[in-house]
Amino acid sequence: MNWLDRIAALRQWARNGTRAPHKPLLLLYALARFQEDADGGLRYTAVEQDLQSLLAEYGPPHKTTPAYPFHHLVSDGVWEVRTDRGDGSPGSGVRELRQTGATGRLAPELRAALRREPDLLGRIARLLLDLHFPPSLHGELCEAVGLELEPAESGRLVPARRQRDPRMRELVLTAYEYRCAFCGYDGRIGTVPVGLEAAHVRWWAFGGPDDIDNGLCLCSLHHKLFDKGVLGVGDDHRVLVSRRFVGHSAAARQHVTALAGRPLTGPQPGTRRIAAAHRDWHTRQVFRGEPRPAAAPAGG
Picture 1 (cartoon, one colour):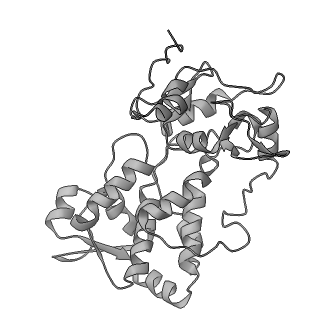
Picture 2 (cartoon, rainbow, N blue to C red; picture 1 turned 90 degrees about the horizontal axis):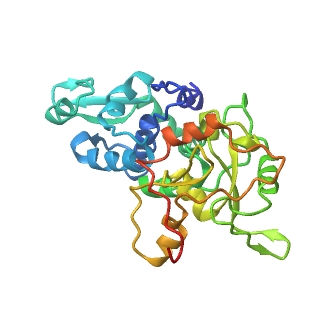
Picture 3 (spheres, rainbow, N blue to C red; picture 1 turned 180 degrees about the vertical axis):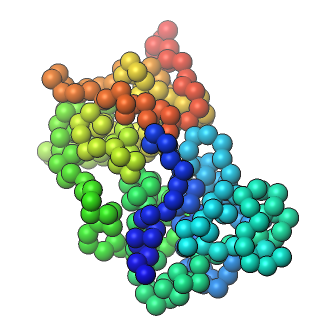
């Protein structure tokens, strides 16, 4: 049985590029717990808060529940649920999972494969990360679930039917003249840019192309905040800042809240700006809450 193919084929609710990372998040969490205790189970009432926190941090902007993947992942053949009544999930309702003592864990065949092949756990984890989350979030997501991974093997784990374009970074940074589109940062060491990255507006994992009109040159800080839904891009190509973001320090105001309403820096004339379809996807699927009003001019 090819477990990577099975993981890549997880059935998820999807419509118009809607993000539904519920099952991948539960699997990453379960893999981390497997590292700690290969025979242990995850009682729903004991892990519900952890899973809810993961969904709030890395899931879609709208409210959701960990009961959904806890029940529905069984149908993918990688997960099992038992209750005080015996084998089988009682359903996807929170009350049913709580009242029946529902306990989930990786399917027996998958647990056996993980024991036989020591590197399989890392390969599955990296596949889940590559297919469902942008690279800027991989490290902190592993830390959030408690997953310990060895250095990655050579080669990508994304299905070969779609490969990333290695030229995108240079094309996007050139289009924005090596300046962060949000704050204008343009640091270098000698002639080498430092802390500048090519961000996908519509995530590559969700069909976002490696095209200039789906890219932004961003500094490392603003790339992370963009992928976390703190920052966005409005229809008028001005910076959106989420009302949900809270920062009282002068640094938070200067580097985040003061960006509200600021026009993007770049791209240079003759270069395609961000396509409306990609901006719309990011606003619906990543940006959190409502945008703040434009920041008042300094001294105004």
